[in-house]
Length: 281
Image (cartoon, rainbow, N blue to C red; front, side):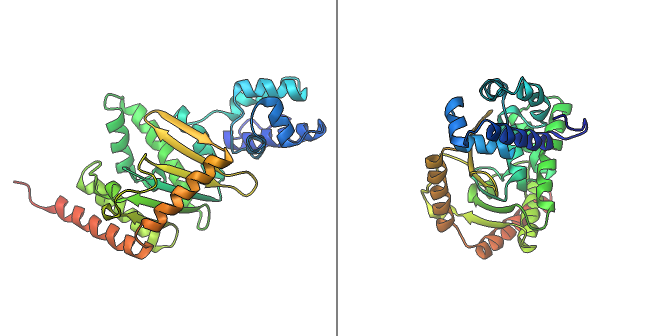
């Protein structure tokens, strides 16, 4: 199967995933049985078939060997794995685009899908203060392309819990923060997203270790993503996903209601606006 040359990587992954499903079925294997041959879970195979997980080079070699596909997956894997995103996040960004719902906890930062250009640029500059402009602009372009997921009026469903620290930390300065918080408030008023704020008064909580992201799909098992500086892990282990889902549910239970959260976000945005307009000494 040779797809059109102008297919984007995500579309290629879906097509290659379809071919994987056909090849597996021709071999008379279930997802679980193929997973055992590859030393991965059956759900991992299902995610490759659905295009929500990349078929990495070493996996492509194992697939060709297990299914007798004469190098098909090795040949088609390179184009399907091209990405504008940092390598540790590329697979997650691709899965995000296919998700029917995304649950996210922003511990210290506003999550990427809710960032404005000014905020995102400040984050990238803080993380890479010596990077040339072209590197920052490339990262910014990819980040803003991700936010266009929210241009669709109904999907994915995005439910974000924002720690109050993410609202109070002045990333990029008062004007940048005011703009980003107004952007979030606008999306909430349009009922495009659900946001809850986890206030400082909530004290300890179920995700003190840091940010958390869960993604659900129509035709593949759910995934969870955790990250650290320059490191990202996309996990499908059912027990881990269930534990992270419980953590997220506990965060929601301890957060302000969406209405209370909108009021707080709007109030903090106003504070930043007044701060930015105060005369300088």
